[in-house]
Structures are given as structure tokens and as C-alpha cells.
Length: 197
Image (cartoon, rainbow, N blue to C red; front, top):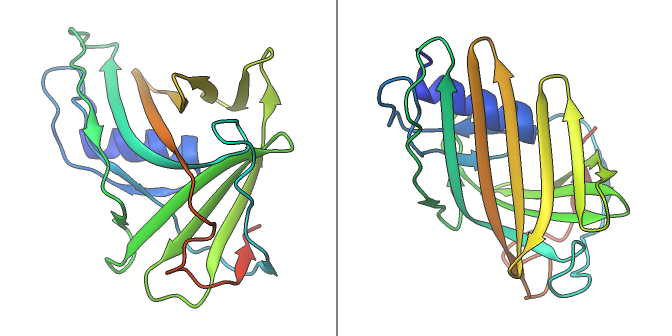
């Protein structure tokens, strides 16, 4: 059986390129929902400018994580999956650094996923870019080894589905994002961005 914290960390870490912390809410061969996302600081980088809000409700809007459904099945000990929705807090506690909170937003622009993150107390915020492939007329896709991510606009929200195959584990998370309509970056963030490699 796969430990929930390890499985969710792998799922979100490989899928999202971020570090995570998660609670263990597993039962049987499936994982219950849990976890929160956070971004690491990385090294190096170049100063830059913030994002733009784009078309309201379009892929190029700035998006804020609202909730997530996380589950996994150990194919060596299958059971009926347990689904639950987790409402994510406005900022997320980092599980692998020094306990400071991280505020994260995403945007899809010019066929790239742009992730913006501010770690409490830092004098800059961070920006990471990941190339995406167009999937039809209404979606985007990223595949890295046994991990895949899809992005769709659905009911005025951005929906991201991450899937990872790990040993006998089949792990999946669906995150919904609400459009962020205020000026970006938020007023409590520094004005300088650092691009992560």
C-alpha cells in the first residue's frame, strides 16, 4: 500500500514542479483527499515583471487554486476509490522549508503555464514557466514521463487534472481554480519578480 503523504507529494511534486505537504487520510488501497500545494524558491533567476490579468475567464486570466480532489489506487491492492473535495486555504504552509506561507497563482499564456509564487518574508516573488501543448480548441496538455497534466475551462473555472503512474500506484488530482480579478501582483507582494530556471 502506498503511504498517502508520499503518494500525494509525488503526485503534486512531479505534476506541478512544487513541493507539498499533506495529511494522511488513506484507507485500504486508496487515498482519501488531502494536501496543499506550495512552491520552492529555487536558485538563480532573472528579475522580471508581473503578469497581466488577460481575458476575464479565459486561459490567460490569473487563476487562484480553490479546491482539489486527490485520490490514488494501489493496483496491487485495489479497492473502491474514496473521493472528497478539499478547500484550499488562501496561502499554503510549505512542508519542506521553514514553515513560511506561500501564495500561488497560475496563468496559461503563449502556450505556457506560468506559476507565480510569493513566499512570506521574501523581497521578490517567483515566476516559473512550463511549455504546454494545445489539446483541441479548449484545452492544454503537458506530459513528462509517467506524469500528465491537462487544463480545461469548465463552468467559469480552470480545471487541472494531474495523473501519475508510480510503481503499482495510479495517482490523480483534480484542482479547480477561480479567476483572480484584482490587480496583479497582489498589493501585499513585492513588485520585483525572479524567473526560475
